[in-house]
Length: 143
Image (tube, rainbow, N blue to C red; front, top):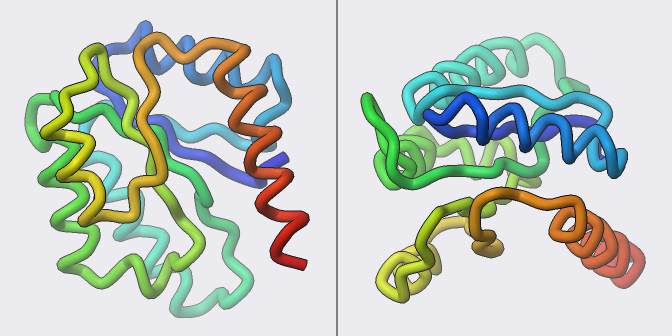
């Protein structure tokens, strides 16, 4: 089980589903949500400030990220995240794109970011159980 995940989507129902499914499969102890990339970036900004005085800060190791959102979309968020050099500060955080359409262009573009996969909406119990199993196998192989 992860300590903390972040779900970023402008659709409140999708956020609710992400939260409920993650709770049901005991995917994470804490599930944070953001309504767009800007809110997610503000969340990481606040974590960055807090990390300066708290070296043991618990931050999300996994972010479920929608691409098409108002205010700041997923690509703009990822670009800002990298520009701020957060991938070095929060070096264990990885991203999974959650989209209603899986476009090959987006899949290829994601390879330039710390995106580890794509899921189609809505997130299901089976998807998270499979992901949980994959993450457990990966974790075991790194010890």
